[in-house]
Image (cartoon, rainbow, N blue to C red; front, top):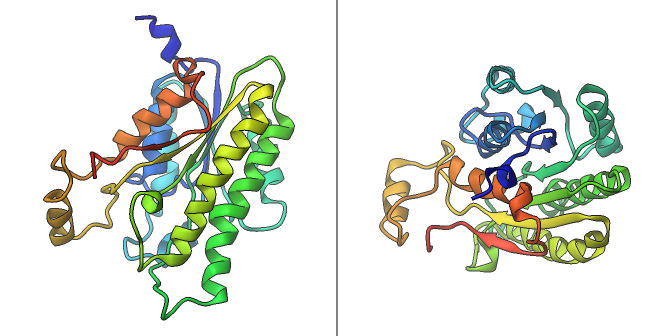
Length: 259
């Protein structure tokens, strides 16, 4: 096995949505850094304060310290990605702190519970602004700035809306379904530029939001017998970001333990 094909040495990765140390964004950042990449993070803690799991005020600073302890360069920017001009602001920051970005991980997301009886335009707009609009604009900014002659990677985080219904998360499911469609079409547009584009569905992942009863009920239904840990999806994402994943593009990969 050529271990060099899994190395990200000399690469710069941008990971959005890394505000909590036990979250998926943090796990992705750690995995990419362990493979050799320098890391730029974004985080937006006001969103976490509105969620049942709450915020991790020291999370971004501590995560950056962890990454730097691995011998990597790491920088973080608090940023609401739904604001006008956010994509350009972020890439300007990453370029100034670390250099041109090779790997874009669109992990930041907006999620609210809401079925058909509570669905309204504002709820749809909140999900669209983050899950689709911000994601798409980050992809466009990445593509515009990408340096010819290198291999680029875009990996979008999606969900399980393609394998089963989410009747209590309609706005979320609609926008994540759009992420899948966007990923497939964007992959064809960017393949001639040397950029692969894939999406990863991490399945039910234990990032602090699962109650003991919900976790037990889910584990009874998942064929592999457990919910995912953040590092499960992070390892898949690291593979897709590496040279070893260079011939995989336009795919929506489901890391769901068979669920």
